[in-house]
Length: 71
Image (cartoon, rainbow, N blue to C red; front, side, top):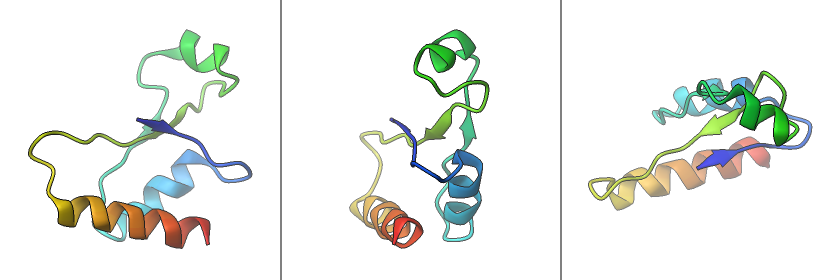
């Protein structure tokens, strides 16, 4: 998933989540043309990846941290 937040940078979100034990990097992830086409410019967005081995606790931690970041 690539997430963006109006008025907040992806880098800010990434740092905030990292302090809460959630690894979600911010970048354009070598898709600069796609990032530009989406209006994100060079900065890109916040990358959140879920996989079959992602635990419910990890998802809960992500959702709680995002709620705190946006609250």
